[in-house]
Length: 186
Image (tube, rainbow, N blue to C red; front, side, top):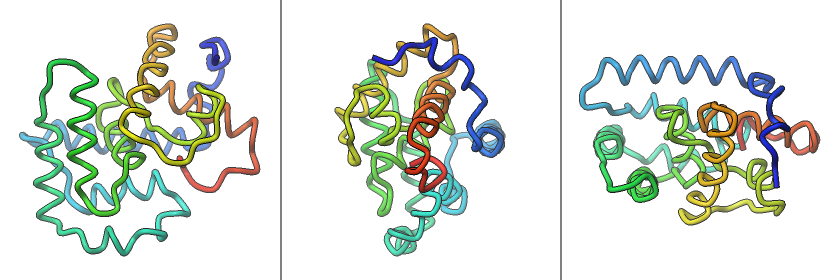
């Protein structure tokens, strides 16, 4: 089991830290200006590129077919969603975002983590491997809930946001397995 003490020196150590902070600031500014909050297709595309890095082109044809109007409608619904508890809200928001072609659970988690960093983290194989000791490349909503439970425990111990914990976990794994780095946050 990953210990919080293993992450202390990695909070801002990722080579992606600055670009992640810039993207979060850009999205935070949008959130402050828009009521209700939504993303345009171009803005969500920035999230896809950040998450997928060099893998972005792999499914870009799916994303290309997604209408800007649909992106605005789905993201508006996603960020207006409410639920009785965080797990039900996570499920509702992920299901909403994954209605968009080219957006799977990983990309949905990236959008949530960048826009709501105090609530969410990005699920990916690196984080999963560090938290659960297994190699996994695809994720269900149930996996994401388990991941978030573990990240939230570390977040509480470190007094960091879940997104900060996630980036530190990602950097820890990248340092342990440097050859596997293929993209910004996958």
